[in-house]
Amino acid sequence: MMARGAEDKRSKSKIHELENATTFSETSPAKMTKKHPRSAAVDMPYGFETALAEANREVGVLFSNYSEVLRERADVDASQLRELEDILTEARSLESHLKEKKEHLRQCLALISDKLHG
Image (cartoon, rainbow, N blue to C red; front, side, top):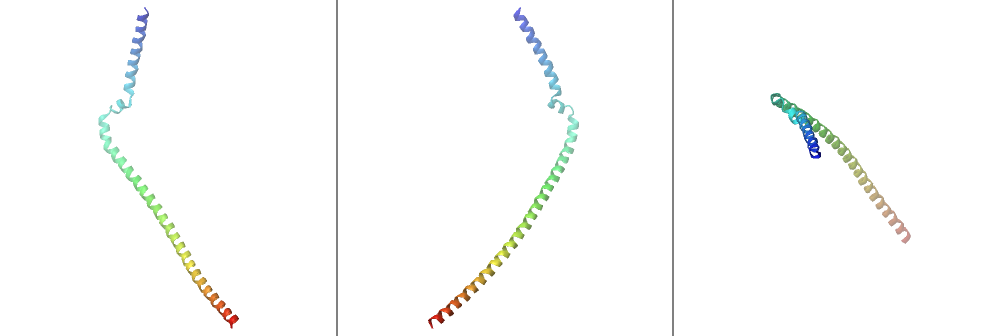
């Protein structure tokens, strides 16, 4: 008797699994997409063209943003270059001024030395 009861439970669970499997297979994404093959084929070129247009638009926006960033970076680089050129010009001017001062000091010391020896 026990063996028969176990078999009944197994067969009932198998029937229940099969019923659930049928329900699941009808609502699975694969089954749902295959229900309308003609409309999918008709919409495919339109969907592709729409996706392509959207991708082109996004690429255009990305290139626009990229060129804007490059333009801003070029402006910053040019500004920094001008600033560095100004600093270099000032440094050369100071160097020239210090060389003149050094030469003037050398002449003054030579004059003082001549007076002390003479």
